[in-house]
Length: 569
Image (cartoon, rainbow, N blue to C red; front, side, top):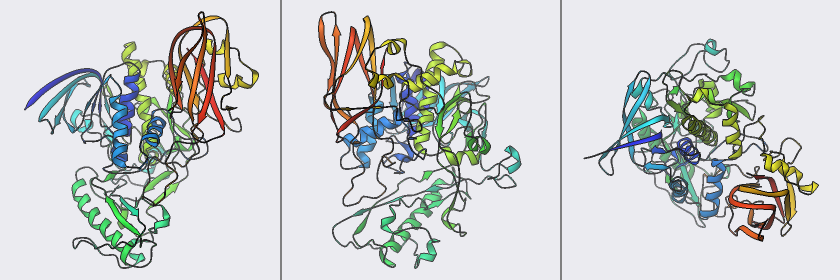
């Protein structure tokens, strides 16, 4: 056995989308991070092991940006064949690209030391290297989904459904219970150009008719990932996971046998390509934070002064019986506004001084969780808490005492979106002179707001010039291009069609552009690229200039170029 000790600023436990975004945002904001993940890949429910698509806020122009958008656009650029294994490695590459992150894969958190309501260290077992890792950190972010640090540290948490009277909600039952939403094992079929046979394993269940599936949609044209192959809400959603996996596997193969062999479901040319190795969970432990967000907060739009992230999925409350629910559709889509905001106070522990969290384990009621548990939302929560922790560490203040305005502005500059909070542009940006047509690029709005497009459309090759009254020191430029926030929603397909057109770099995005500065020594090209695939571009400038010219040269397919913002620091 080996024993390794680490000292760091932030230890992130759990490498799903929330944990990844927590680690990356903290690292980019200047602190050291250990990311401890108990699986061999990153991504959690979105990884190749589970393959749940990344849902988020619904409605026009509500798509999550920041790190969530970055990983999706990088995937479109690299992963032409839509391989889930390549998607894993896209996420891996984003993490490994950060020099402030030490990544521990295959490392399960199994112990913690605490004193006076403060975590002193956590210990993980890395099975591939037979190594115990002990991490000493200033903050610990539990992004594990199941809140593994709760039983290890004694941090207060909630489990199950509250009673209606507890928070004045209408969705919960009259009497509180320990029931949760369940976990799903997903199927992924692949379309071929020929008829495919399927033989059911003898150990799988048999479903002779559609009635046996409770009316759940299972035609191939439904574009379904079979999310309703769900169990666990009536059981212990943590300790019964392996037992439930076995039952779900029998159901899954029985359902595919039904699709292929029990009537015409449009599946003749489809074959079973993949079955989930790990069930994807929706709900287990939720921490008690400084504030507990409830159904009424959701319905009111989340009007919090310390808003740092947002959601916009419906209150999609799955029945605990899952597949065995016999009353019709297995979930109720209670309406929720999109977007509604989440506060920083719901992302750190009320009692454990240096414990923070992001993902489906934040401080919300069961009802509120049903609207903010999807992964794009979890990613924005991760970026929010990672940024807040970084500011807390650098300023030497507890997270509850840092300037919330500074947290919000840092997030907005890093292309997170916080509805209702306006980004403040720098004085250098305000003072830059440009043609009236381009003035909108300086207004601090990085996406359409209502009927206001907030963007400039130009032709490829058109120069956009910003000038200053005198030579100015410019350390960084920031440009927000148009990645089409209203494109088809998800990051990866749920089934592999013979021809798939949705998953590629958006045509609206700028592919190549050039930046030229007029310096004291004359014109100088300070940046040029022919392979941009990101919405947000931060360009280290490090020059002294009295004018800057941006020349977009080519998009990924659009005739016109759309630009939302240009900033100078």
